[in-house]
Structures are given as C-alpha cells and as structure tokens.
Amino acid sequence: MKWYWTQCNSFDGYDQLSVTAGGGIRTIPFGRREALGMVSVHYNGTFYEAVPWSGEMEWKAKWGSWELRGNCTDGDRPFEAIVTYHCDAETTPGLVFRAPTPDQGMVYFCRDTFEAQTTLSLWELEWDAQDRAFVLKPGPPLIDNATSSQGGAEIGGGPWWDEWKGRSVVKQPIKSLLQLPSRVQRLRKRSRR
Image: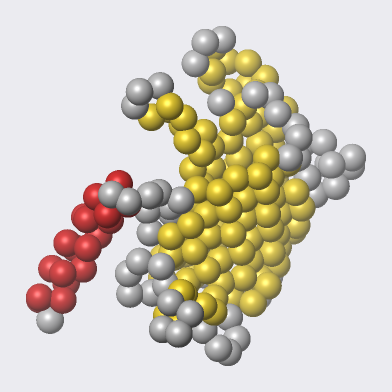
C-alpha cells in the first residue's frame, strides 16, 4: 500500500485555478497490482484531466518533493500539465497521522503538509503529423508557472519515506474500453449541434 496526494487552490494572481493530483498502488483482478496516477486542473471554468486511460502520468515523490507530469491526448482539448510541490524536509516535518490499513486498522501511515511551495504550468498540445506524436503547441502556455505557498501534499502507506518514481499508462484493449463512455458522450454532443 503506497500513495501520494497533492492539492492547491490558492495561486498568486489567479482567481479561478486549482489543481489536484494523486496516485497509488491498487489491487486488480487475479492478485495483481498496478500503480496509477492523475492530475486534474480547474482553470476559468474548464476542467483538464490527465488520467492513464486518456494519456500518461509520471511522478517522482518523496517527503519534501513531489514532481508530477500528466497529459491527455484523447478528446477535443489535448494538453500537458506539470505541477511541483516542495518543502524543506528538515524544517517542515509535516504531520504524521493515522490512516486505514487493510490488516492493521488505523495506524500512523501518512505524512502531510499545507505549506508546500507549488508551481503549475499547463500547455495545449497539437498533433505533429511528421513525428506522429503530440507536441507542445507553439506560443505561451495556458498557465505559465503559477505559484503558491499554500500547497497541500501527502505521502502515505508503507510507511515509505524514500523516493517513489512511477509511470502509469493503460494499454490496449483496456484503454479503448475505458474511453468508450467519453467517446459516446462526445458523439451525442456533436449530433445535437
């Protein structure tokens, strides 16, 4: 059992901007486990969601440093987001608290803070036919290094205090099955126009 979680909804100079990201290890059928992550950004009434069934997610997390990158390449608004949270691990020990576990009940299993220095950038992506890949759209990003000193960040499980690097990508045919509801919804919207 292992996870990270981050959140910030108070960015300098922005009225309508918040970000939430999280990831963890989950059990899937046949006793297997997989690591998943996500980044979601609400910006000026638009929701940007980077999840493994519509793109990719990478993270590097340990107490004091959370570096998260996610993209969405499915849908009408492809994008990439990078969010970082930092706090001095020595001067910001965070709060260690109890969390539920599968076998031991509530034990001291988490550490979190609401004093992380946070930076968020979000770019639009476009398809490059020559490279056959999504690339950053030319011009400035939609969100260019928005900052805050009020980020919430957590690590949990294990307990683990060392660095955890991960990448979550859902492979075919599962990816197509997970994308089916959003594709049907988009087709319905287009047929109503």
